[in-house]
Length: 217
Image (cartoon, rainbow, N blue to C red; front, side, top):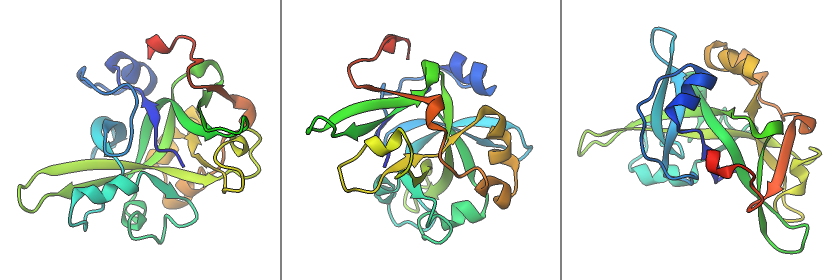
């Protein structure tokens, strides 16, 4: 499961890659559950907008925002039924999560070694997500949040190398650039057709610490 990733936060990169405008802001370099990071959704007029949301979806019925801390990944096998995610799926609250790369643990040396995983050339990409809206009944504060869709990766040439031996292998749903509008605007059936593993030959991975050009992100 992906609990740590490097979001795209620079306003010029968000505009260049997704055509959305966002004022410059301060974010931690890497995002963990409950941190704020940008996500992209559709406005009522059908145009894209970028919003800041908590990593870890908070369903509208939650009694407290802390519930989202453990809802940062939505398994494709249960997303339509699990109370934490089913309303966001049913209501079409789909989003793009702008990403440079994400981190997963590798145990090939016998020890936990964090690796970064992304696309060939380390170009930014979008992870398929769901977003939620929650209102604090005491303060009236509105909180936006999001979660990442994941699929089984036991047979994925790259992603099967991560997580503990014997554990199920999972990976986030990475969207092709040409599929991003379909994810945001398509029907539930259209969106479901995009929930699948990304081709391993189009991805790359490096041990954390071997990050050429990391200062650019």
